[in-house]
Image (cartoon, rainbow, N blue to C red):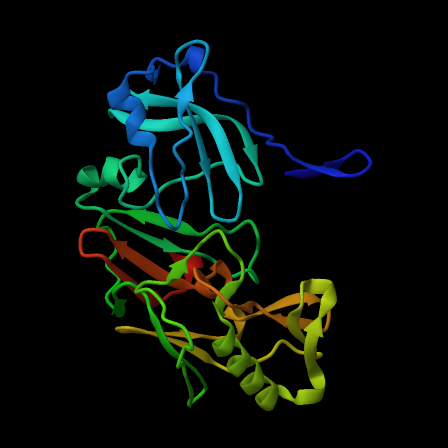
Length: 304
C-alpha cells in the first residue's frame, strides 16, 4: 500500500499484514559479526547490485543493505532459519518495495540455498496478464515440478525482432556483451536498444496507422493510440539466440484509459536492456542455473 503524506508530498509504503516478531520465534537466530558469516554478503551482480555495505550494529549483529538497479533499497539484519540452516535478511527499512528475493548464483541466493531440496537449482515463473482479475495471482515453482521444453536460449542476446512476418534485423552500432538482456519481473516495461525500438515503432505505425499513434507525454513518452477496441495485433516476436518468443497484443499494449492504448516498451541507448513483466505475462519461463539456460512456453498462467 502506497501513501502520500505532507507538503511537498512524500511517498510512504505501508503493509496491512502483522509484523514478524523475532522474539516469539523458536527458529529465528540473528547472525553476529563473525567474519565467515558477514563476508558472504559481499556480492557484486549486474542484475541485483548488492554492495558491500554490511556492517555491525551496536549490538554486534550483522546488518545488510541491498539495492536493486532501479535504486530500490532494503536495509535490515542478517538472520538464520535454524530448522533449514537458511540465511535471510530481516528488514527494518526499505524504499520503493517490500524486499528482494535473490534468484542468482550468489551465496545468499534463495535458489542456491534451497536448490538441493527440490532436485536442482531451477525455478519457473508464470505471471498472469494485467487484463485479468487482480485477485488472480501468478505462480513460481521451485525445482523440477514443471518442465519448460518449448523454446530454449542461452544468455539471452537479442538477434532481431519481427512484427507479423516482417523481420527487423538488429545491426547494433556498438558492441554489446553476451547476455545483455535482463529478464526482469520487477520492471513493467521492456527496454530494448534504441535503434531497434525505433524500427519497431515505425513498423507499428505502418500497421496501425500513422495518424492514430504518437508519443503521449502524460505517460512518460510511451507510444500510444486511440481506438474503441483493444488492438488485435500486430504480433511481435523476440528472436533470442536459440529461442523465438512470440508476443500477442495483450503482452505488448496496455489499457491506459478508456479508448487509449500504449505500447509497453521503450528504447534505451545503453545496456542493460530489459524483457519486462508486461511482456512476460502468460509465458511459463524456466530458469536452470546449473545448465545456464532460460526457457519459454506460452501458457495461460491463470490455470497453473
